[in-house]
Length: 97
Image (cartoon, rainbow, N blue to C red; front, top):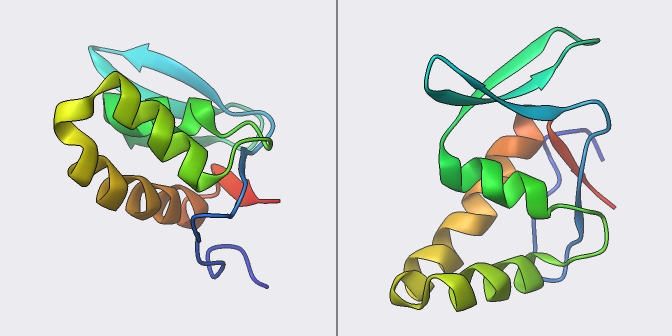
């Protein structure tokens, strides 16, 4: 399947693409891949989701971790995590394994 076309299911296991790192630049959070010259502007939530993509955790597990940390936002997290992962796939920062 072509990059960016894979749909994240709850059982999917996302993995951060090697070479990316989280940086703060002028108060903004970015995902940076220096060798590929890619800069992805991010918010704190998306950067946290990206950091949880270790190739071992499923989408469902990432949702559970974030829901435990932020129980008042449980429903929003369940909707936002898959959408954020799809965006990160399109941007080349994660891939499904």
